[in-house]
Image 1 (spheres, rainbow, N blue to C red):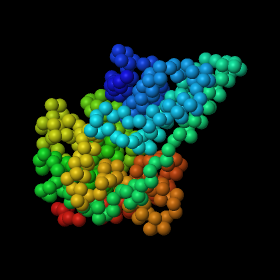
Image 2: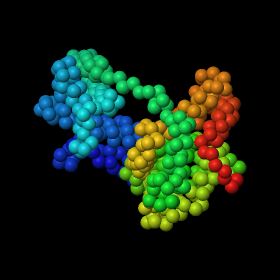
Image 3: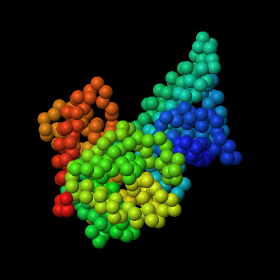
Image 4: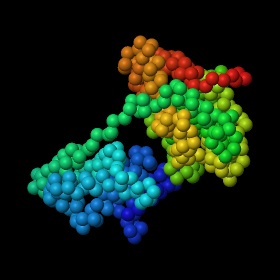
Length: 395
């Protein structure tokens, strides 16, 4: 079984599971369509997890779903066969073959299988009379399998708090020095590429942006003025975006002020002087802010690869946990620390941080409270941004 991603005429991307003959597998694709409100990357991961589940069914030469409906699936099948199968690594690249699977990956597989079986229960039981013996058998089977799968979850391996909460300010300074385009050891094909990378790191550090949000930005999303800002906007799928894995904004849009003149200066320089160098190489014009070396919208894979490279090139000074995600953790932990030192209550700190991270949406009747929180957020965001880059700029 293989997974392909289909781009709809609207620009929406949906994965489809195909069998060995190249035909769609209805039952799995119907389940994926029932979750079409989720992000494309999540649906693609779910599809691969279902393909692993399907391989297990075929390896047993059994009609598992028929046995499940008839109440003939017990602990020996789940704990003795399915759960060990889901713990296996199925990476076909021998160089990347893992000796073990991380708890998070296993738990994600387990969750997808559990959700699929619950969905299948609802589909099949919807055709039965709830008074029938068949319905009672299926309901008991679903409850039994649900319980067995739930008890199989494993806890993640504990990690050091210093790693999980991002970087220290000293490590931030080391990172900024390593990616500074003026540093001869910074990574990039040319100065324009180095400058683009530098600006992306500054924005992720200074504004707490997710990689998907960063790569979804368009030129018009940069607002100029006394205090520049980045407008993070949720948009419908872009039909013109040719990236295979389209970046997206998972949660709330928001306006992110740039108080620090260093970050504002470098963003302006990138727009005025260096972005055109990328667009000149493009076959078609693009309105996205960050472009690849070939002038196409920059991909999530490229950002991930960039952080892998700088971790390798600067392993003597940079911690091994530096990723795009760790920069968001750094932003969040430092802002939360400043808010805590201000004496604000935990609920207030959480709401302020939520505004800046785009994690939750405060109720519309709280508009006056939101203004107060925004004022606090501005104060501590300004203080944090100005702790990142120490240099003189023309304005």
